Image 1 (cartoon, one colour):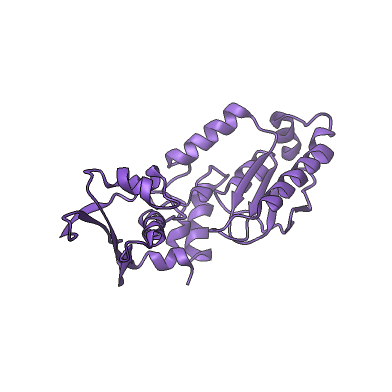
Image 2 (cartoon, one colour):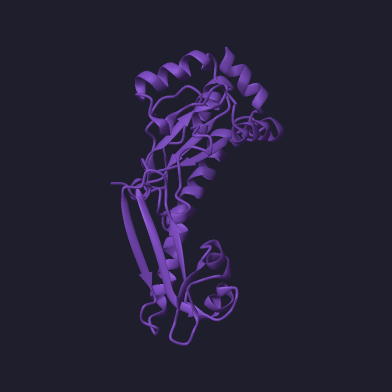
Length: 264
């Protein structure tokens, strides 16, 4: 099971056995625990438990109970006072567990299915119902641009008038492209594998409907970034492709011209 999906059905109680005297425990924990920033500790939102140490110091904890949790896990860090890294790991896990990532926004909408592509009202609903079998992770929303996030992105596209959009995703490990020009064949370890367009997707809206090239990068992992050398290599490959295909093509035709070309 994917780690993110697994976390969604687990309720967890974290006990950070490293005690503190201060009213704000992070003031002490930040100085004592390795690899723990003050911001990380504050984000954990530790709560004082009713328990005290032998010397009367407060022991802190945090309960996290997602909806529809089926399993309960108790995580203990710092039960041995000289094993400070164990408490640090518990705080990092609270960060990962307490704010689980979701594909959809807070309204349950897949933002990459919410752009105003032609015939959205018909195609988006049919695709969601028949092709995804009403997968809640791919719900396109009630109407195109129903979400503030997609509204903002569309406004940015209109304001900035980019010659190229690069949209980074994960975890399929491929390079996708939509648009009226020759696509890049590879970026770093990612090779071109055009997967088609979907109703309401950015690739469909920008690359097909507006004639604005959209490079979609699908990283290999949703949890781990590529090595720094690979990140740099991808950027170099992107720049080289832009120089050969766009910048040298009459100094990168503006969006308006690309739109006219796509409409022919």
